[in-house]
Image (tube, rainbow, N blue to C red):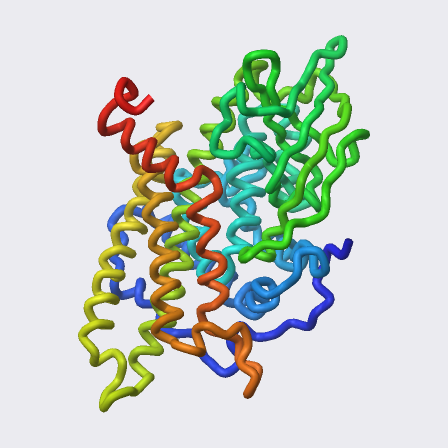
Length: 421
């Protein structure tokens, strides 16, 4: 299986220039401290230079042929982006508002490629954050190389029959004691970065509880399946992880035995903030491209921007973008303040950011008409301006806790568990 792209670098939109970033004058960030705003500028500069030229290639690739976008991963490592989420004592930047800076970085990456944002999210927010809850030795051995970009991290909770439901009854990957060590059996599914991972954090059932384990790549009995071919996020390579009598030592337990569900839920809560931020990034990209098109396209005696339908629709979307961005920033700031489960904002951020990206992307396709529907124009090979965003946006409503689960989380906040279960 190829793990680097053989295709030449192509421009994001050969016949177009980047549209005005409307958030620069429509959104006034009154919450993010200076260090976070500096991260936004730094990551935006990186993404414009290093991701924008590759975004079309990544969005239209074939997971089984083109493989993991190693060149982009290495560029993020060289730019020290993996340092943003972590303390200085483990090799990170040591920012005060690490979660807020990380979520902001995700938004800026997703503006150009949601696949790249997802790779960053899983590597840092999921695998990296989980490993940061380990012992000093575990952080030295596994977290520091992740921060340096020397290895790729993966996080394995989902299974063929257990994804949003991570109860001990649903999880079928089992860890049994073997002397002072463990033996793992099971199959994980939809595991991002698994094809190139140097380490995989695995959630497994230990009798009637759940425990997280550190599984190094190359461990006997660990195999990775054929990459999935997906509707969108084609640069986010996912594949099954099969554990067949995988033997691990006692130092493989991450956290405490029986504490896996808490590790997973805390990690996924952070991840949901990141997915909400990615939704905002895609929504902003679709919004900006649509506004530029509506201004330029003439029909029925005037520009499309002169039609009240589009004026009112885009006005509503501007307000929605304001709310969605504020929600993920607020949830991240609460996480930085020490709240391990910053509800209801985390659920709201994930729900609103991902819902918004799918809605704006759909209307962007409509605004562009036939050009919005094409992947590549036959006349001059121009890449479709919003087709990839439309495909990529859907997964945000599904992974890291389906949006129905976020509504359930919010309903419990409203009515209480005695009514919602």
